Image 1: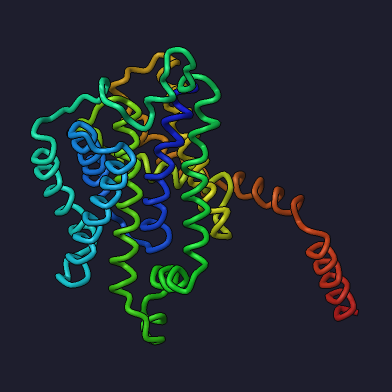
Image 2: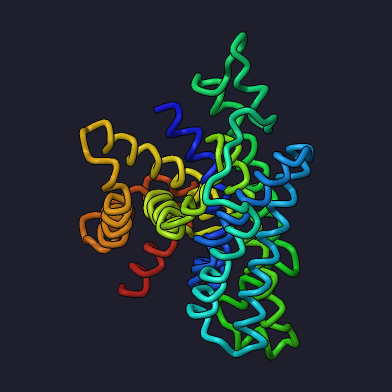
Amino acid sequence: MITAVEIGLIYALMALGVYLTFRVLEFADLTVDGSFTTGAAVAAVGILNGLNPLVATLLGFVSGLLAGLITGLLHTKGNVDGLLAGILTQIGLYSINLRIMGTSNLGLLRAETLFTPLRNPDNRILGTWLGPAILVVIPVVFLVALIWFLHTDIGLAMRATGDNPEMIRSFGVSTDFQKILGLSLSNGLVALSGALMAQYQGFADIGMGIGMIITGLASVIIGQAILGRLTIWRAATAVVIGAVLYRVVVQLALMAGLNPNDMKLISAVLVILALLIPQWKGFGRIKRMFRLRRRTPEERTRDQLAQENAALEED
């Protein structure tokens, strides 16, 4: 279970990237499956060639930025449908990733990585609850940075691009630039997650990114189904929590005796449930009850005055 939480915290970066496109830009980006592996491949090759693990990880992040840039340019400048642009980039990245690695699998077990100090046999941290306590710093830092960014002028323009592109264009904002920037940052976070995951598990594999978009969507939907998305900080925080919950649920399913080959099916079922349960009327009533209990004193006073004014008008 501890390992599931650790993996969930690493996947939280990828989920934040998916949130940026799926919720903020309202863009269904399928580049994720390819850029996740690209980040892992670049970091692995860099480490095996003697680069500092931190530098190799940053290069993995940059490779994701470039992957998102290609998708953005195809969509905005090439007038290619967004869904198709992501698929084309994803397919192209498969061959590029093979070129980068030179093989379908690269082992890092004997190489020095960012997680090597945490695996010291004399004072092992990963695999104990100290592991998640340390790893949680990574998604929290990027979560705070993302929330801050989305409240800047550029971030507000990006949010407006997803909500109402016609309106924001009337104010002279380039929606093409906002889409390119959003897609680049999104895939940069995804590739960074891939780079960290390769170092955590000790290898980079050509197929490690398959189905990553489902994992990201599951994290976003599950987290926001629980915490909601009325504000940016709540929606983004829900994504991080959703990533951890997703991995824990998958681990519980495996511990219950389900076949590991059914993991993709489990992921699909989780996404379907997360989409359907919020539409259930009983779930809506529970959320309304929760909101009523969490109202501030000012909100309760305002509602009480509104009720009294309505009663006076009726009289």
